Image 1 (tube, rainbow, N blue to C red):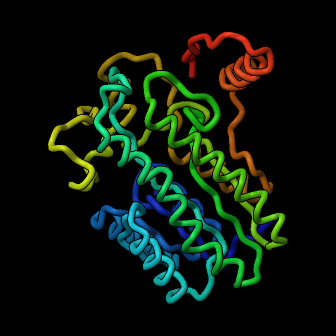
Image 2 (cartoon, rainbow, N blue to C red):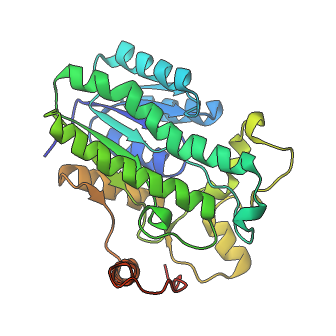
Image 3 (cartoon, one colour):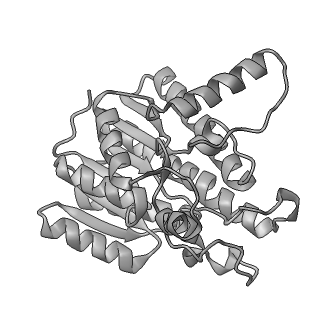
Length: 291
């Protein structure tokens, strides 16, 4: 089990949603925190809150799609605390894909989704892992994937699902390569849940850079959170709060889990059915979205 108290953690996307809940949970375990986010106001609020509660913390405005920006984050983290023991590559975006077909989605949507959700993870690994290895201490790199795509692609979010499939693959390969290289680091992959997490991911367009925008609002920003959507539309969705995910992450870190995947029978059934169909070279039935 990795020791937590007194260690340093970096959390990207750490000023909202699961990232914010995770920073609070890690602070409660006595870690020093480096919070990265593209939203400066949210970042300032988060750092002020942590410091007011006695946590050693800094905030670094970071665009994970930019290698130089993530390298600057690493420089700031090491300048402030000397070492980094935990890297949570958590920053991610949703693309407002519901009711749209993949062949109709503009390339700027595809490019933005992959730039944040996939390249952002790679930038984090490249910026931090060599320094973490050189530090010679035990540590963890945890990448945030999703059940949707990361384990089982759902039909209504092709870009998001594809990016999260990549994150799972990257995480598995990273785990093996860290072992083969005989480092003191390990990897993990997080699938927030067990149900749809009540975050603002549908409102990701609020942070979309102009280079990835065609001037059209393609996101589903009418609802700021998943709970707003459920309340307004009457959808039968079960929700998980970010704080539940954060508590599960801390528990999983202490338990040395690679697969940070909460137990839920609906997801287990979907995975089992999909795996059996693959082995049997069978059909590809539409999934029952009872999650």
